[in-house]
Length: 273
Length: 170
Image 1 (cartoon, rainbow over the protein chains, first blue to last red):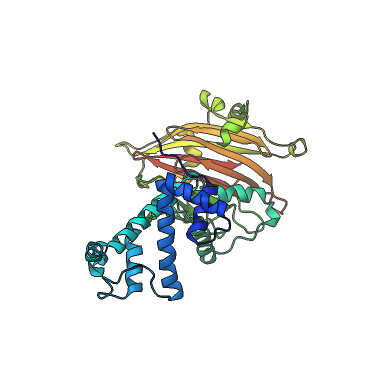
Image 2 (cartoon, rainbow over the protein chains, first blue to last red; image 1 turned 120 degrees about the vertical axis):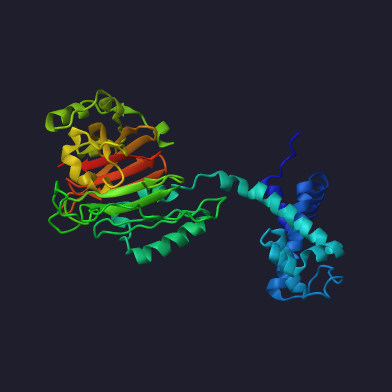
């Protein structure tokens, strides 16, 4: 039978309890009931309590509240606490784990071992409870949905590539995407677009490789001018905005009047030919 | 999914209209593949734009073959000549869309290539602003293209290329 899940209100109550912010006897009684009933509640409170202590150590430079006196001879308490937190989060490499002598610390200290255990439990519980909805939400096209709501006149002018990419990357990084997708382009003199989309669950970069185009892909005079350039001298094709949630998009051509803009849509695992 | 929420219509006569004005013959499946979804308001209904969409398959074979119906596009296909020497016309159709309307062209083994006509610019050059959607990799792109402007969306798959040529008709 599936374990009962905590509600959002119950989670908030437990967080308040971990921070000693409960105001009433009724709230405290509710917390006691939750702790008695839910393993998940105990893990969360334990994790928050330990994390809170470590944060107080790291941020406020206060004395470490955890009883790590049996291992403090090896290293500074604060350094050890930070290392244990990183270890619990899976952020230490094998070499770093060995350097920090984490195994010995855990073997010799019940407090450290329990703390790491609680941190892991809390991390898993938090991920399951709080992040579950976020990780399944489709955020891939959210920018486009927002942009479509804006009238053209209200949109900021498209900046040059050098300014655009960091801004987009930072914006997308704020959304929490984890996979990088690159798009580079040449659309006449209009703009070069480069977008890094980050998705949950991945952190590897997808390399952008410009397809090996034959001579003549750029401005070959033999390309017939089936169309004429606009009278204002601007390019015929302007890419106003682009979103992609995978693969690579590459722009070619369109540099001369009448030359078609070539847009490659390369799925992961496919070559550009 | 947008497609689930929108009512599917069919742009009848688009392909047939193109047959009368182009050297390209229109395969019978072309008009059936062109679907449009009306979402415009009555006040927006006057603005229309036409897009000529040509599907081409490029591959590498022993003996070079270029579909005779692609003679007018030899120049545009030149960039691909190095690695591909067979070019087959899959279909050609014209999507005439009202403002806000979405037209769909089936791309073999890849899904739908969709165009949504957004508006016509008010500047000196009456650029047609439209959105293109491709299924894999899922891409959505808003373009502003001058009348006569052409884009080639190239989708590599299994050693071949599917080339979707879109020209904004004058």
